[in-house]
Image (tube, rainbow over all chains, first blue to last red; front, side, top):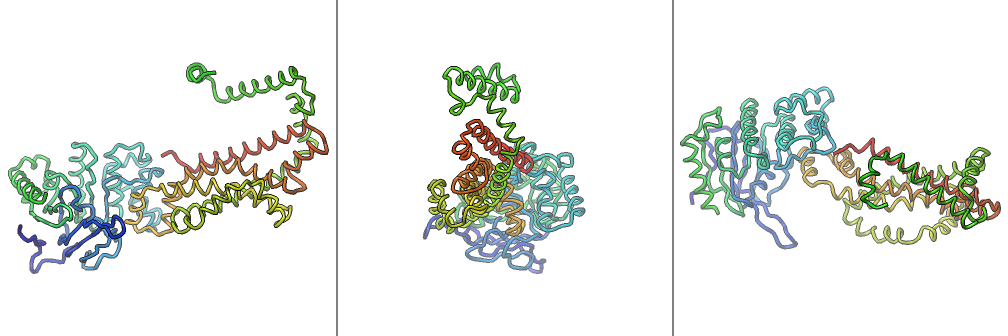
Length: 266
Length: 259
C-alpha cells in the first residue's frame, strides 16, 4: 500500500485544517481500550470540499469529532488555521448525523440557538436566523416545532443552525444518511451551492461512494478500525455539478478506484 | 361500569358532566347509607348536614384562620422543599460522588414515617411555623428530588454534545438545555409533592400547633364533638390539596411546551 501523503504544494498556502499522526483510543473498561484512529494524516485546504469515506467503525465520526475539538487525540496534533485545536472553535460549524434539535423550541429558536449562546444581540440574531432559514428553504417553517417537521426539514434546520455562525469550516457527519435518496440528492445540491457561495471549506463524512464523488474535490478513504488514511483521491469533475454528472465516465472510474481501496481496507 | 361501556357511550359525555354525575352518585350513596344503616350524625352526618356546616363554618370564621395557617405552611413548605429538591436532584444526577454519598440517607429519611419524625422536629424547633414548614418540605423533597435526578439524567447526550460544540457555558447548559429537557419529569415530581405538602402540614400541626386545619380536625373530633365540622374540615383539606395540585398543573401547561 502506498504511503498516503496529504496533498500539499511546496509553496502552497497553509491548510485550514491539519491532522498529523492523530490517534484516538476509546476506553471500554479499566485497562481495556479500543483504538479508533491510528496515526491519521490529513490536510484540508481552504475552500476545498473533502469527503471522508470508510467502512463502518473506521472512525470517520471520531475523526470529525477530533477536528471539531470535541475529542482530544491521545497522540498527534490537530491544527485549525495554523493553531492547535484545544476545544470547539466558533469558526467551525458541525452538523451531526441526527438533527439534534431541541424538541421544545421552534425551528426559528433552534436555528438561533448558537447565536443566543454566543450572546449575539436580539435584533442581529433574528436577522441572521431569518437569513439562515431562507438559505435552507425553511423560511415558512420557523414557527413549527421539530416534531412538526419532516426528516428532511429537520436536517435542513440543523444545517441552518450550523450556518448562522458563518463558519469558515463546516464539518458534516453523514448528515443526510437517514433521509430518502431524492431528499438526500436535493440537499447535497443545495449544500454545494451554499458552500460555493460562502467559499466555505467543507469536510463531509459519508458511507456513500456516489455521494462522496458528487460532493467532493477530494475523497479520503479510511481503513477499518483502527482507522488510517489508505487513499486520498482527487475528483476530476468540474463545478458547478449537477446530478446528471453522476453518469459521467470519470465518476465510475473514481468510484472503481475508491471501491478498490475500500476493498483493500476491509 | 365496564371499560367497554366507558369507551363507547360514555366517551361522548364531557368530563365536567361526568364528574358531576360521579359526585351525585357518591352523595346519593352516602345519604342512602345514613338512612338505611341509621347512623347518628356524630358517626356519619348526612351530606346536606355537612354542606350546611361547611358553609356556616366558613361564613362565621370558624375555618378561615385555620385554613390560612395551613395554606401558609403548605405554600412555604412546598416552595422550600421543591426548591431544595430540584437543586439536590440536579446534584445527584451530575455528581456521582454526591449520589453515592447522599442517596442512602435520602432514602432512609423517606422510609422513616414522617409521623414519627414530626414530634422530634417539634421538640427541636418548637411548635411554630418553622417546624411545619420543615416537615412539609421534608415530605415534598423526596419525589421532587428523584424526579429531577431522573429527568436530568435522561437529557439526550447528543444535545449535550451539541451544546459543547457550540461552546455553551455550564450555566447555559443548565438553563437552556438541562432544565427545559427535564421539566416534564420535574413537574411529575411536583404533582406528587403538591398533594404530599398538605399531608406534611397536617402532620406537622398534629405534632403541636395552635392553629391550622389539623388542629381543627382534633378540635372538632375531641373537645367540640362536632362531626359535621370534622367533615367540613376534611373537605377543606382535600380542596386545598386539589387547588395546589391544580396550580402545579397550570404552571406545567404554561412552562412545558408540547414537544
